[in-house]
Every structure is written in structure tokens, then in C-alpha cells.
Image 1 (cartoon, rainbow, N blue to C red):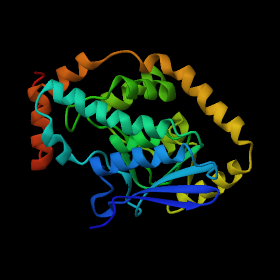
Image 2: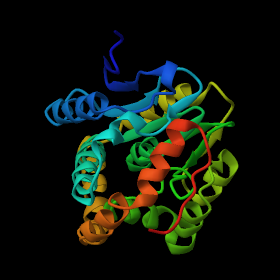
Image 3: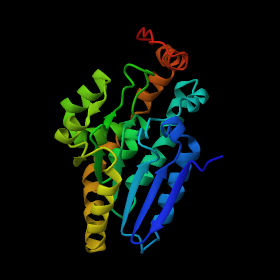
Image 4: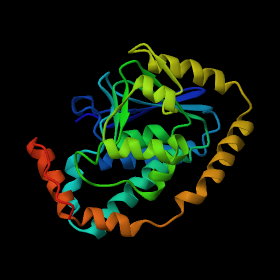
Length: 258
């Protein structure tokens, strides 16, 4: 069985690889928990000056949470627990003290988009697509914290458009709106991330650390708003159960608004 998440130290840069290429790097709890452990270790690693996150292969950074994980979600309370567990992984990556860079080839969708968007910088290939198409697929929702992160990047109208339309934004659109810092030829995202990481690694680490922390503190207020009631409403709904069943059956869901 292949290791689902890889960590490589090539000082002063570390690379985290989401490693399920046969499944477009769909994210399992093993991967989320492994990411938390890796991020925890980076806190005391003074030799690492920059961290790159990538997906194995050229099809996807990560295609979202593996739908098998949703088999455990049957009630609104289960949904709150699911989102809290997901948030621990996303927040762990967000809190890494070193600058983080997402190297994106192909799709970054759902949970994969959440991980990419908490990285400090994002470089994508020309075929990159980023989105959270839950309104037309599973019929679930984002946590308040992930809504807040999108608001910081896209503003209210951009966030609503991305979520309401349920479509994936192209690389050009992502660059224009700030979801990507730069678009490079397909297959070159990791090489570009390495170049930028090497540049950043030469800079004053405490300045970089304080810059990250200052921005996080300024962003923190919205993410502290409670939203468990909204999550319970979604994950306890018949529409969510229909969304999961339709996805697994490879058919279009029939949402009823209940």
C-alpha cells in the first residue's frame, strides 16, 4: 500500500506531497491526520525556511475529500464533527510558521481547494482549475472559517459567485481574482514553487514569521464566528443524503430544499 502523504526535507526547503494519484489525490482521514503531524513537526524545525505542498501526478493537486469519508455522516451533529476534524487539518497547514507555497497542477477542488488556499502563495499550471462545486454535487457546505478565508481572497460577491455557480475557475480566472499568484506552463508549477521557495529561504526568517502571524491575526475575527447551526442544517438534510447517493451512483442529484 502506497504512503498517502509524503514529506521530504531538502534543506532549506521541505515538500509535502499528497500521494494518491490513482484517485486524483482524493483526501482521506489518514492524509488529513498525516498533514497535521507533519505541520506539528515543522514548528520546531528551524532548518526549514519554506514549505511546498503539491499533489502527486499531473491530474490534480487534490480532488477533494474522498467521498467514502462521508459514510460516517448521518446527522447534523455528525456534520459538525466532520467539519471540525477537517478544520484541524486546514488550520494546521495555515498555522505553519514557515512560508507555504502550493504548487498546483490540474484540479484543486473542495477540501483540496481549502488546503491550497491556506497556503501563503499559489502557483498553478495553465490547466489548473480551482473550485468548491458543492452546490451542484453533494449539497453540503463550508465551515464559517472556510467562508472567511474565501471572503479574504475574493470578497463577498466573488465568494458567492464561486459557491452559487458551483463551477471550477480556470487558471486565468484564478490569477485575476487572486486565487493564484502566477500561472505557468503545465508541468512547471513545482519548479516555479521551488524557485520562489529558494528566494524566500534567503530572507530573514523572523520577518517572514511575523508577517504571516500579523496577517493571520488580522483575518482571525471572522473565523471565530460560530456556524454550527448552519452546518447541522445542511448535514442533517435529505438533500445532503441525496447528494452523496447521487455522486456515488454517478447521476445528477435531485435537490428538494429539505
